[in-house]
Image (cartoon, rainbow, N blue to C red; front, side, top):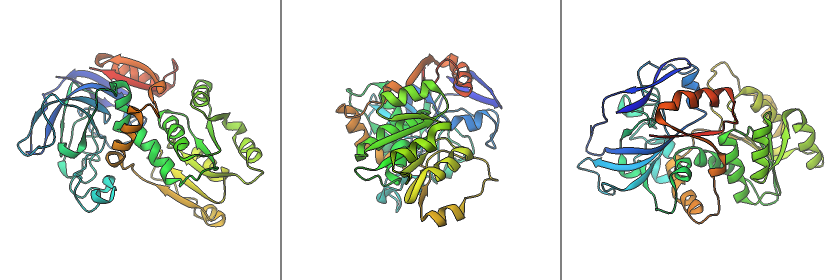
Length: 351
C-alpha cells in the first residue's frame, strides 16, 4: 500500500510499504478514506521527537473496516468508523472512569509515532496511509452514522476531543470570559467547544490574520497577540480572563495565558510542548491561586457525545478545513501547514 513515511526532519515521502495485517485477535484493518495532518505531527516533522526513519505518520483517520481479528465482536466488515488517535481498551480501571489516555492495557499508545508513544505494542503504524492496523479495535474504533461526512468525522479522531478537553479542564461557567491562545486547528476547535459551556465571551489570540478571521466567524472576539492583554483586561474590568486555554504548544503562549488569567481563575493547557528544558512557572501559579490542568486528551471517551453534536448540527468543524489533498501530495500538505502559507489550517488527506 501507499503511505506517508518519515525519513528525517522535514523529509516525508509517500511510498510503498507492507500492507497492514492482523497481529492480534483484537485487531482490525481499517481502509482509510480520510486522514489529516495534526499540529502535533509537526513535532515529528521537525525532528523534535526521537523518531526513527521509516515509520508511517498520522493519528487522525476515518475509514471502512476491512477485516477483523477473531475476538472483535462489535465491529463488522464494511462498517464506517472513526479511529481514535490514541488506543484504549474501554474496560480497564482508567477507561471505566473516562481517563482513556491512561489506559493500562494499551499503555496510552498513539498511532503514527513508531516506537514513541507505542504503549504496550512496540510500534503501531500511522493513518496517513491507505490502511492501518487498529489494536483493541472494538473500543478504539467508533462506528459512524452516515449523516456525518468524512470531512467532519475526521475531527473526532483527535482535535475536536482535544479542544473539548481543553474547555472541559477550564471548568468554564456560564457568563465566564475565556481567552484562547492559538488559533490553529486545536485552538479553533477549543473555540467551538468553549461555547458549549455558555461563556459570556471567548477571546481568541493569534498572530495570523486569516486564523483570526476564522476565529471571528466561529463566534470569538479575535485579537492579535500585541493587543491581547489590554483587550482581555478591558473586557473584564481589569481582572483578567476567568479561564485561559493554551492551544499552541509553545512557552510564549503559555506565559501569555498565565498573564491573562485572573486571580483564582483556571488555566488549561492542551498544546504539546516538547522542549524538556521548560520549567513550570510555579510562583506565578501560587501567587494567583490558579487551577492548572494539562494532559493528553481522553479522546475516545469524548467521541460519542461530540459525534452526536456534530450529527445534530449543533457544532460543525468543517470550516476549519483549508485543504483536501490526495495522499501523494501529503509532503506538500506538511510544507504549507508548517510554513503557514496558502491559508493552511486543517489539511485533510484523501487516499
